[in-house]
Amino acid sequence: MDSEVLAISVDHIYAHNVFAASLGTLPYPLLSDWHKETAKKYNVFHEKNETAIRSVFVVNKEGQLAFRNTSFDAQKKEDYNEVFSELEKLNERK
Image (cartoon, rainbow, N blue to C red; front, side, top):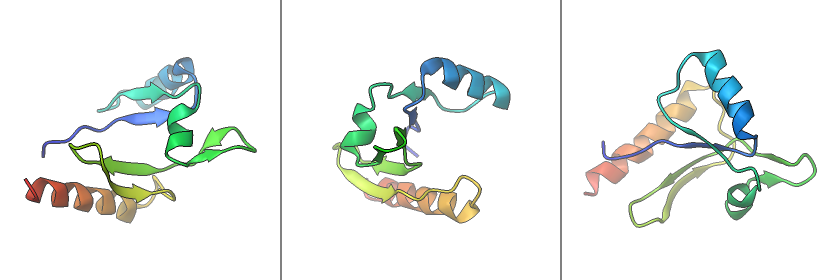
């Protein structure tokens, strides 16, 4: 599959390093949206708490949003399956 996974959080990069170390290793990079610009552009910034809503986005090669889940639950297998299904659809359109 021709795709790349990136994790973005409004947490500081130092918090990311601690988080990643607690898990051992991660198969994708953790990016810091310290100024909260990305979360705001994707409409997943929670103003009151100054946090990002846990979400998953699939962006196609043209930079267009192909899939959005703003209630992603990392504990639910079906949420992962939904994302993988969307990635496969993009791969089939090649």
